[in-house]
Image (cartoon, rainbow, N blue to C red; front, side):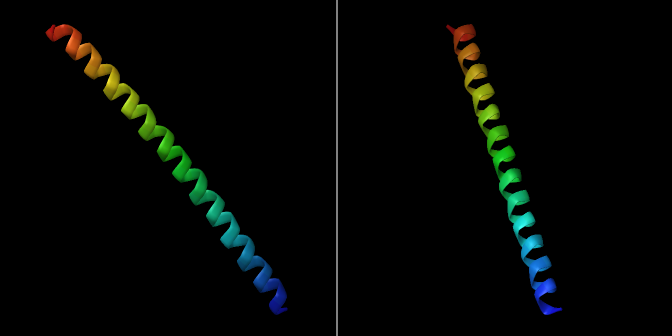
Length: 50
């Protein structure tokens, strides 16, 4: 009986780690896109000023 609980617990932990990993990956992609847009806006701003 205890082995079933250990198995379920380990599966839950693995699922949680995969979820956290995917969430972090999505956040990182979002940050990269924001940085890209910032660089683009900065370039446009410099072109307008010059």
